[in-house]
Image (cartoon, rainbow, N blue to C red; front, side, top):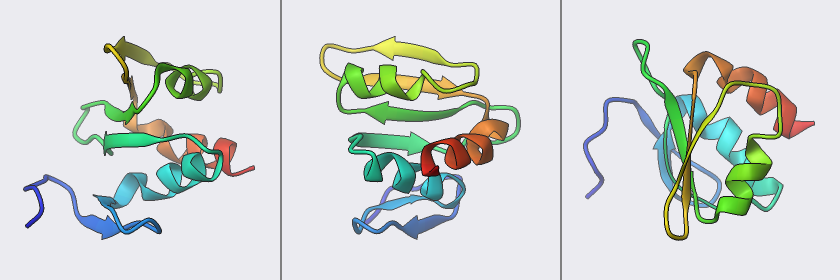
Length: 95
């Protein structure tokens, strides 16, 4: 049984259920070797976010154009960003 979410869930290429609006960005990051653990596409003015398994991948992600907030944990790191940037970030990481 999956978690209750505010967004429509779709199956990604690795079999994980993710928010439909952020799937293509996650797929692009995975193709670049970045490991993610959690994500949310954001909505109604809320920020989108991606939790990376290691801080190095979070740092790599924030090197592209955009406004980011990084929260470092002991091992992982969360990156929050405006949801309207998802399309632009997807194009950046897909190229």
